Length: 259
Image 1 (cartoon, rainbow, N blue to C red):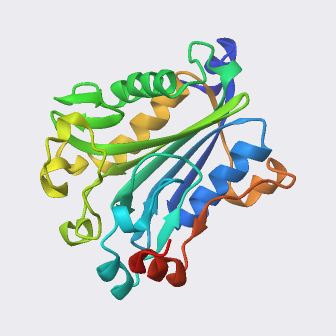
Image 2: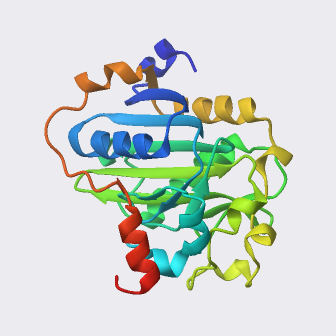
């Protein structure tokens, strides 16, 4: 949809930031900053992250979720993000899409996790239209009964963020850093990581996914592209920054059972 056509329809404005290979720690820091200090809507797309990194939800406990011995031995960075959700390992084959919205600009969505999730499911339903087996299943995006997209959210006052990591491809060896969590979706049925997840590349071209996602967002918002270097003019003021890299000392304590 053209910018002028979108404006004619009175669609709310959404700033679009397109990134490639930005470290996930930097991306999450940017998202938290925009959620807390900006008053505008944002779509952030990051085509891969250059360094393999484990990302945990804000309440995740390393000893319960990670094979800490191999993680420390191989010096895999572990990040705690500012949103809830599960644990993933991301790399250059992971695609990221984050949507930060004012609740008043998406009037059909209530600021509750299930409502936001249903809205995102319909949005990605447009992206994967014609792709067999796509559905939103227990907060995951799946093809059939195999997961390829994991989601996390944060809802504050009149704003919320919904962000997704999509497995375009994955390294089987990297999955060995993750333990099977104690709470899993019912449809997982005790399958290990490699039986539970699938590769998006078997279903859609990487560039097609990116362009179709931006088009789907553009059907609901007037998109305006913003460069990373210009973010400072949109996000001003102090804010809580709870996204952080865990230290080796923290991981050692977790392994020793003292935290």
